[in-house]
Image (cartoon, rainbow, N blue to C red):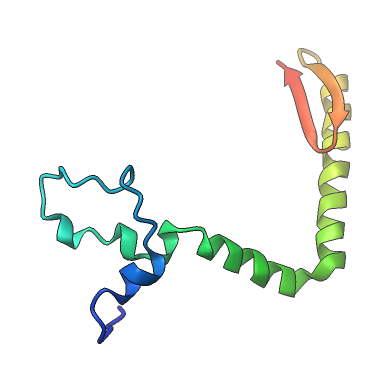
Length: 101
């Protein structure tokens, strides 16, 4: 639980003011709706997670992970080609795989 002395601070920091997300025609008192006051409502938390992950892994770690995703896609394509009842629709492009079963 977080207690703040300044009223409206969280809303001021995190509010997207997205009318399509928080309509006022609710069957309850919308002043208790915390959605626009939370950090999860905006994109700021996504950037923070990316920054923390990048600090942890570094450029080389990201490169390793991405290379691994490409290799996994190639490996899965080979499994699909060999498996009866499966059909590879397109050759692997980057790390995307298209098949029918």
